[in-house]
Image 1 (tube, helix red, strand yellow):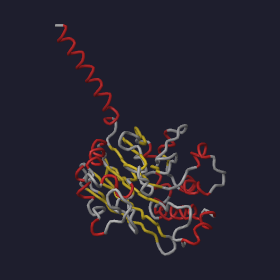
Image 2 (cartoon, one colour; image 1 turned 180 degrees about the horizontal axis):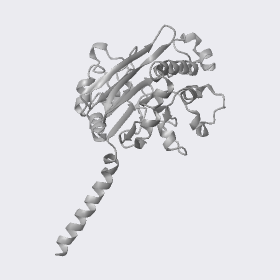
Image 3 (cartoon, helix red, strand yellow; image 1 turned 90 degrees about the vertical axis):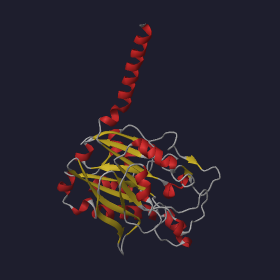
Image 4 (cartoon, rainbow, N blue to C red; image 1 turned 45 degrees about the vertical axis):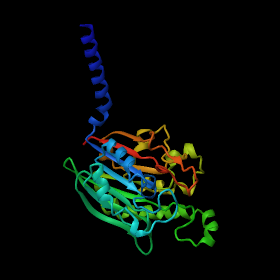
Length: 323
């Protein structure tokens, strides 16, 4: 009798643990996974992305946004792979199906660093953004729309210019350009262009009342984190997010929910990946976290191959919503 009672108690305890462990996911009905996967998940090429797929599948995302979504280099090297051998981005439909996503949208693409959206539900393609003659969006951007629980959800993806020197500045002039922080001003121009061609296409009050999210590798710091960086108040590295806060209805999800904490999104100490939402969408959030687990925590490549890390030089962000 005691043995039966013990089994019953253990069973109840395990049931309680399982309910507790899954309750956070049950409280939500929509999960976003964002990640800059570095060079088309260069780390995952040798095993045909098996670990990557297993990790993504375990997160059970409803929609994924990945930056740097193209194959570039040969396995374990920084040698360029012939273009005809690139698996991504053309292979995203096949890869996404392995973790349960049937739909794929590739954003605007002018170089080797596009962004891709994959989803369980159909994706409406709104715009692929690459810029114009006056403003080139170096890694492109995208605007897609999903129908989620009877609501239109606008998703904007981006990846801005990464360098301190300006875009397309000749090599011999880069030191001067870097000293002048021309890269910071270029990122600000890119951001204004992307916003004006996405959320800025609507009257401000109308857009503020809709479901919008914008995410990506912004390659820039935010003033809300300056208690960590200690930059001068007029530092140009703060320009991008100053613009977003002043000129758009977007809310910085991680900062707003954790105003007294700082979370790096890289292998170093820098938060340069962000998820922004408008207020109605922000109000639906039930949890968010920058993921640093056994798989996703960046580890510097031991051979010092370029600036490559394993599995990526960035950390993923997961946001749960309850619509």
